[in-house]
Structures are given as structure tokens and as C-alpha cells.
Image (tube, rainbow, N blue to C red):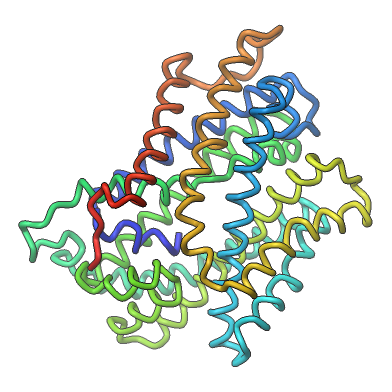
Length: 382
């Protein structure tokens, strides 16, 4: 969420909203495809187990690498970003605050899914309050000429939307948690509505956030933020130059911290459960401790040794995420429908044409990413 404004600075308001809306629809349907693929398995089954059973060992191994790569990179980014924000609050070195962040909040994931559920509710309420106060302070000052960049009428926007898609896709990358949600709710239908509700809430917040940022910070002033790879701290610093109220600035910082923390424990839970199943760690204190070490220590070490290495790696995360958010779910459901009882129970909408659409969207997003990396797409520099 915090990286969307800089990722969409070239596409600006209309095309950025269009890109994330299309992404939200496809990501919701692909999540439902996973639910359909899981429906004839035990509630405790995982993404790893189902992929191995339906698509085979080689495809599953590749999928596992992509899931861990994206999850690990996101945790790496959250740890680094939280360290930078807490550094200003606590007056300590960012490496120390990153360590504190991991050791204070990752135990919620180690404890249980219910603990994550409870702390997430609190964080969401906290986010809503700080978001309403902070964003309302920005929203009442939105300048329509800035929001729609009417000052520069000759500028093009659509070409930049292609480069935004990988970041937008990563913003809806919840799929490694679908098995956890299914087990938690006990059935596909409830999990289906949880997924839909979650993606709608996320989309609404993303759009409100983009409107508030783009309505206050001129497109031409995104240069310093983009130069630092869209670093959250750089965005907040640049935004601070156009926010007159110190209270609004503090609210935005508070919201940013809550957003990172809620994402951290959410992604952490998905990776945790995925690794526990992959390595067959027992659901005991000792087994969960092993899973905790594999989930949180590698990204923490990377954050301490290479604080901004995630800026480069997270670009690849968008392309890697297309594998397990689009391509694998569609392939799973196509194969699952040919198996025994595949036509009974919960079904994702759209039939075969929808699986083709989801796979095509994933492939195109990955292609756009690599084209961007090779300089083959327009690059906005501010």
C-alpha cells in the first residue's frame, strides 16, 4: 500500500485506480480458484500439498520457491521499513529497531492463527482511526488540478500503467494464506466471502490513499521518492513538505506503522504455515519454534546486512508472485475439475474462459515487469 503512490506516479490517478481495480478482480477470482482446488481435501491441507498432488513434484518445487521468495522479500521490506520509521520515534539505530520489531511482534505468529486474528482486529481499528484522521486531513486539502494533473495537459498516462501492474499484483498477494483461511472458517463459502471482503476493503483503502496522496503531492515532485526506489521514509518525508499540519503528518506516520505491522504479521502467518507444512514441522512449541526461525530470521539478517536490498528484489517479487497468484491457481482448478467429484461442491465463477483469463493476466504482468527492467517500457522519473 505504501509503495503504490510512487509505483503509480507515472500512471497517476485514473490509470492507477484502473490498474489496481482490474488486479483486485483477477486476484479475488484466483483465490476462489484455490478454494475450489482445495475443496475435496482435508481442512488442514496446504497449498504445497495440493499442488504436489495435482500438478506433480517439479511444478510444486518451483511454486514453493516462488512463494518463499515473495513472502521472504515482503518480510524483508517490512522489517527494514519499520526499522526506519521506529528509528525516528525511539531515537535508536534502525538496525536495533528492526530487531526489536521482529522479536516483539513475530511471537503473535508463533503463538497461533487466533492470536494473529485478534491482534489484526486491533491493528485494523487503529489503522482506521489514524487513517481517517490522517487521510481526512489530506482529503480536505485535495486540489483537483493536482489530483488529475490538469496543469500539464500534454502528459500521457496509460503507458505507465503497465509497469504498475506487478506492484499492484503484489498488493493483493494473499494466496499463500487461502489454506489457512479455509481451515480457520471451516468451509469454502465463508472463506470465499472473507476473501471478497478483504480484497474490497484493501481496494477501497488503496483508492482513498492514492486520491489523498495524488491530490496533495504534485506529480512532478515524485522525483526524490522514485530516486530512492519508492522508499516509504522518502515518501513520508516528501509528503511532509506539503502537509501544513504536524498532527496530520504524525497520523500518517502512525497509519504507516500500523499498515506495515498488520501486513508483517499477515504475510508472516502465511509463510509460517506454508513452511510448517513444507518441512513437516510438528504443531508443538518446539516445532513452531523451528518454523519461526525459518520464517523470520533470514529476512531479518538480510535487513541488517543489506537494508535496501529489498528495493531491487521486490521488483522481481511482482513477477514471481504471478506464478502462485495467477498461473498455479488456474492450472490447479483446471486439473481438479477433471478429477473425481471435481464438478461437485464449491466452484469458482467463469469456467474455462476465466482460467485462461487469469493465466493470461499473470503472464502479461510478468512480461511487463521484465520489459520494465530492460527499459522497454516508459519509466516515469518525476
